[in-house]
Amino acid sequence: MAANHPTIRPRPSSLAPTNRASWLRWLYPVALSAMVVIASGRGQVAGPDIVNFDKLVHFGVFGLLATLVVRSPGLRHAWVAVLAVSLFGIGDEFRQSFTPGRFVEFADWVADTLGALTAVLAYVLWPAYRRLLEYPLRWPRRASRAACPARAHSSVSAPLPHENSA
Image (cartoon, rainbow, N blue to C red; front, top):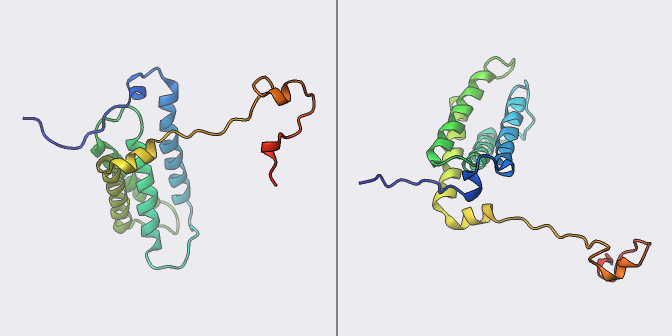
């Protein structure tokens, strides 16, 4: 009998390794990871004077990172995203120990891991949340001269009546 644990169904775009657009989805987690490394390499990080506010930031940023990782192509098990983000968090905490004015906090790593776990569980177990994240964005397109009869014979690009922002 197979173990009954949450897995991620591969999306059609993630099955084709030659599909460059699907592999571009790794750009977001890599970019966020780079920003985390840059920010944690600073001696002072700006933030409000609220007790344990940094734990909330750790929870949110690493939750976002885990969500981006779990949505990336080629990943079949959700626990891999949690483990990868947790290991990244502990590695980043260790790297902070070499930054003047910074030190390792076990509570930061716990907040990183709990944020990753919470975000991935929400993504895997809450279908409405997952559908919201996977909903394709459709940006309104401007009518081209060929597609818009009112502009086809005009050399002036004045706005059409429905484009006025009054």
